[in-house]
Length: 275
Ligand SMILES: Nc1ncnc2c1ncn2[C@@H]1O[C@H](COP(=O)(O)OP(=O)(O)OP(=O)(O)O)[C@@H](O)[C@H]1O
Ligand SMILES: [Mg+2]
Image (cartoon, rainbow, N blue to C red; front, side, top):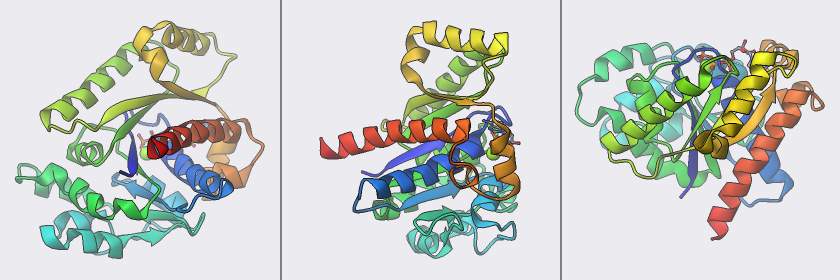
């Protein structure tokens, strides 16, 4: 089964899109470097803001017919075909494919709320095409809305990016609780929280160090910690030029940190596949 990683946190601006896009590309590059047979990764953008779509495709003009919206609105038996037709190649790498978002996803939230089976409208077609990919990465909006629920139900692994701020440990436990509620409420046992990713870490700030120490001292959260990304201005510059951090500055501290996260995730994928 292809592993599908959803980046989620109801808090805004914590690095979900930065992480989703760079982890997805990092996976393509690392799979290629180990001569994997399949090096294709699919990035799904479920956020109507479309930031992940913009940086990876250079486009913000996707609409009803050529974005995830069209997949969600398609007849059930047509949805997988529509999904394949909607996926585009990123401008970062031919093997990084993107299912683009559009502002229409706002309307989808309203139109699909209360419709039977709506939360599975991403998971069902994805299940049918996921085998084409070595991995799937899903970016979500900053809320536990219907779109985010769809992202979670299409995933096997949830990664929670978090900024090292005061009281974040408490917030994290509530995010994990919410993800577990969705897994249990919708009977989706293959979904589990597989990582906490600390982002924008500035070791010079006392509070940041304290948060990381608190996380490491926590029996559950410590086991989930899957990486620490330093605060690094190369990240914002890379966004402005629509480049990945790997392309923008291969030597930047954030680039090295993302490469380490990707290596850890791929190790899990490759070990599970071999097992
Ligand atoms: N490691 C980092 N160092 C410095 N700036 C960062 C880092 N990671 C992300 N940023 C900046 O933080 C801002 C928010 O990042 P991003 O868009 O990835 O967050 P998000 O969680 O997807 O936001 P939203 O909730 O709005 O979808 C961006 O301006 C980005 O450039
Ligand atoms: Mg985002």
